[in-house]
Image (cartoon, rainbow, N blue to C red; front, side, top):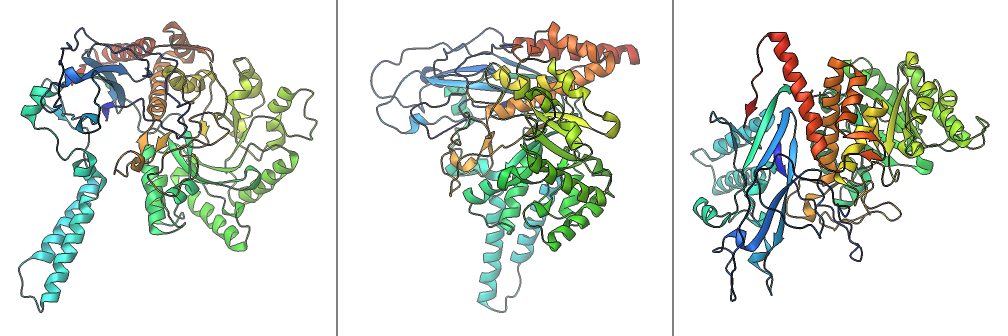
Length: 601
């Protein structure tokens, strides 16, 4: 579990300097679980200031805020308070640290950088919880590399000086490759952490923030209850990192992005767009008979995966044979129930609908239980489905049945009228395996939930509250890295013209901010994770007391009543989560006849 992760609300960045998007111009969010206390400012007087000798409290305003609070440029500093976090097992909970200088400098220099150091979480029993650790496979790889270096440099009689030089060069190359691993990124001197202040200096000049984490005695499932499939543009990765399609570097880059996004309870798919909104969507870059494919598809963190329909780009016999082989292999696996095909984004006319139906017939000849996902926000033009636009939209399943099993509709269509959901769902045939998913993109706009910059933090988190309340069984988001084209990794991020700021961009290349190759999450992505975790709380509560009681809990606590009525600050969220934890504890007590211990770290 990863917890208490500092998260900067200023992570979102753009080239538009005239009107910079601020993630939180609407304000929002109040602290929760904070105790009294704070920093006492003191006068520094005039003259030169050496920031390595002056206490940080005299140089900076430092305060903490919950993850849903937006820190704008006009945010007034607050007292620094003790942070109390509450979380279930296998949950990741975040908060924010805000900084503002108390003094200004005439020239740039050391005063312009801030160093942050985190200690291990320590329980009252002395147990430590480290924020980062290597996986078993990573440890094994490091072991092999070190073992190899030892073998190469063992004392021996060299046949020539050239052989000795070659062996030492090989060992040096191996060690350098190990040091370049992500696990050692924070140790690089050019990362700003090589000259981290010593502990005695930290005691003298640093601002120390106390963090407490209480872990509730229930566990969130490893596999998300709600499949949330998010797109990653392969062409954006190819352009920015100068990668040729199909090379080792290309596979490594896609693999890195896939694994990184999994930690946000997201089921990623890679995508390449064709003409008229055709789309090649696939979760695994390797073919189904590759060892990597089984590793991808069997990952318990993956709730759904896209199978590539290769003929969408090339309708050659080779592409069709490859597709048939892919389906034959996958349909024999236990994870086949998680599969889907995403062929066309928002088809608009009967001609495009006919193409979907034709492809569906081909796929169903390979596997009768194939699932096809189709996104749409209107009925097909040129048809006489119904007298009104909305009624034509509702009747789409009658046109696409049995050629679509996942009907994925835009939340934009609903506006603030939740009653329209009943009309949509009434047209579906669950007995035929049909599902209703939803998506957001350019719309809906304020005050409805979406992930645009400038929206409230609770508005970002409310996207998933809405999905759960309306009864959707899945969710799709078109893009996580769809910014303007760039040809170098460190190029500044520029949002695409014609889209609301932040639309289609949820994380940034690490190279934009430092020498790190690790992607940087936006605060919106952290809030998406929180919303996905909220769904698990509501599902747990509803499994014990029924869905109606779960809906009542959302309304009773004021967390979410509708698309334009939800909590504007963080307090109700913790009230709702706390109610679930209390009921879960009482349920465990009544079942076992004894109380459940709450571990505090």
